[in-house]
Image (cartoon, rainbow, N blue to C red; front, side):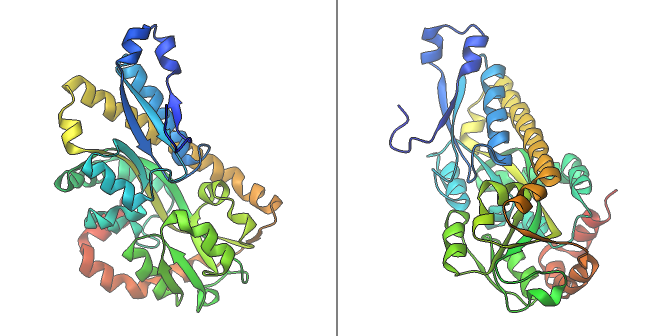
Length: 328
């Protein structure tokens, strides 16, 4: 039984494919994994791939129950639950990570990445590995990077094509102080709000706009409460599979490797889902009634957010920012 939540996706089919007997299956260790988006989202796709790989790579000794749509809480709550051991694994976006590992906030700096390909090279290389290691000091193991996607703006008030169009607009951002600083540089009336509360806040008019990847805008059905989409691609948002450090260290060396490799597979699946949504999702959102701003002044947006650069350099170090920005 999955309890009152009733939304878990139990990934157990691989047990049969592997010929694992009923007695063995009953003895499998069940892992609870939570994320904030729907099953068909980039996070949902990645979580399913992770679950399938866990079952396959451990011979059915572990299987995963997936709780989408913030059934186990928002992302900050989910990370705390993993730290405390009440949730086994979470697949979270990059935005809330700085609340636990402040250095990771560097990735939220506006226009730090040229595009998703640039971000992939950073996260797949030495820099990405260095930042994964930083989670251990907070009783977490970051198994692998995944992807939330390039973030874009939506709003219900007016077309946004230049930085001055954002001035005075009430914009929601995630629980991420770096993103607050960036949007304040654009003159927005900006505030933080957990994702599970966002749809209702947009519907009620508490906020005029928000920003998220195309895949998230689709999954959350924001076209129902937002009229205008601006493809700002102002920041790249990673995701990561997190597990408690004690739980991870209790694994055998072989199972540790299995978990890491499963997370890498899940991360790649989330990237593919985010890329597909980026390619095809804009047309879908137009069909759902959104107006898409074309010919935007992206360089102007980047220049406007440069006003926040001294604060970011003080927080993260100019050399660290330049190392990522200039990575080839």
